[in-house]
Image 1: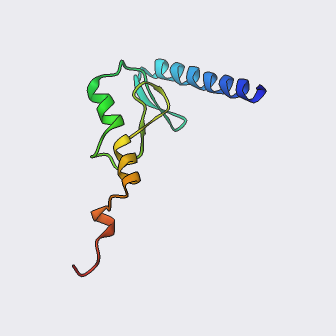
Image 2: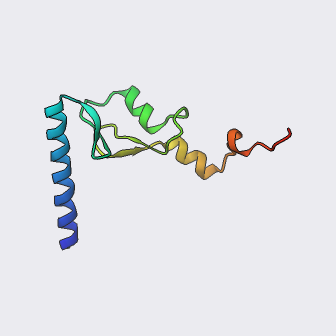
Image 3: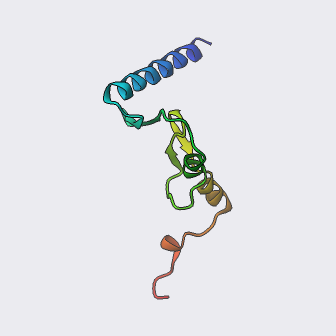
Length: 94
C-alpha cells in the first residue's frame, strides 16, 4: 500500500514538473527528462497518428495527452500477427 502511494506521489510530482517546464518554455508538446508530453487538446488526426499509424515504425509513440507514451496499436497487432517485415526478412540473392 505504501509503495503505491509513493509511486503516485512521484508520478504526480513529475507531471507537475513537466507542466511547469512546458509553461516556462512556452511549449505545448515536447519532452521532459526524456519523457514525451502533450498538453494540447487531442484531435482525431493526432489520436490516429499516435494510436494507429502504419507509417511509424515505433511501438511506443508520444502521448495523445499528458506526460507519457502511447501505444501504436498497428505495430502491436503486426507483432502479434507475426507479419514478416520485407526490409528485414528478405533472402539475399532473390
